[in-house]
Image (cartoon, rainbow, N blue to C red):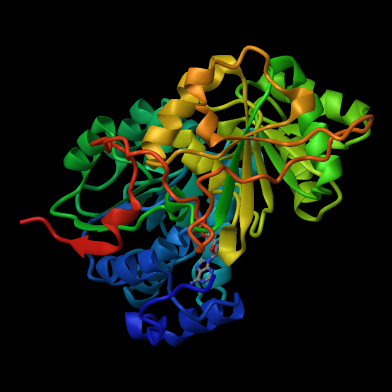
Length: 455
Ligand code: AMP
């Protein structure tokens, strides 16, 4: 991920031990990302941290690297084979838990620290057995962690560092009570790190109760500025969406497409329809068994599966770098989810395209997204799949470009730009006055990359 700025900054200058710097280099990274530059020294200082950063910014290393450093340099108060858990990382999903622990292992490979994951959807017993051994860093989803607490197979009374990763998502998923139950089991004296992409009132309330004079770091979600993500909107009738999707995949030769739908049922149905039409697709959602989810993800990652149809929650935390295409088959009900979704593309410095298929009923959702990202999205109409009932008012003609039909032939997918064109930097130029910013919206480009400690 080629991050600009502070080009001479290295991981060792952030105060990290040679074993950790070596492991980071072996993973292929030499320059810390903005969130890493800010979060690592803050965590190493031992204080609490409130961090505004979403997936894709390098946030995971932002907390795992300093935690590894702190634990390896600070002797455990309970050495021995059954020493208690010293760092607890809570994540909203199993996928994210697995990915975070993967980072812990990779970055800690030259250190004598041990880690494991605890999440639902798999048997308790292997976890129970592993928990009998020494585990320094536990990465867990809240529900399964509480199952272990209930069975007294985990001991949280000596946790030195707590991380709430993607805290906003954990609240969205209804984990607040579970989180509070876990907090009650932790020793009062500890370091707390809270990572969240957005800051709703509920997050602020949680942070107020949890954090003691936290350092605050924040970076703009890269994709809210959409520097690297080409965004397109197709106006299309609801019933034609799947045909347009199949057409785009084929005609533009898309090889790896993550398609977002709103419901599990919708995911199953679309995956089935696409597969039947000759485009192999699998659905990824919370009702699938863990092994089915792992299999689907693995084949999508290795390129043998062309299309993965996912719900927002299931897709959360999927880390596939250089994912070239994301399709919003349904627009999300919550505008912030659009930013999370398109954050799946253009990861690790590559470029990506996010295509939204928008029916007439979804126009208000599109308007909310444009307000949030503070720019109009170029709208395209494909004559063959055009929405008859699309209200002109919702999509002014000035923003619409129509692909010319080819007589007697299927029309090639349009790559037309909106008339406002591009500003030369690969960014659609704003054609409308900017809607006012929302006070509680996610981090914005203009907030930049800064750090402050409140008085
Ligand atoms: P995250 O936001 O933690 O999910 O990280 C997003 C992606 O960036 C992951 O694939 C990381 O492995 C990768 N990454 C993390 N730190 C760096 C770095 N310093 N340079 C380049 N890529 C990184």
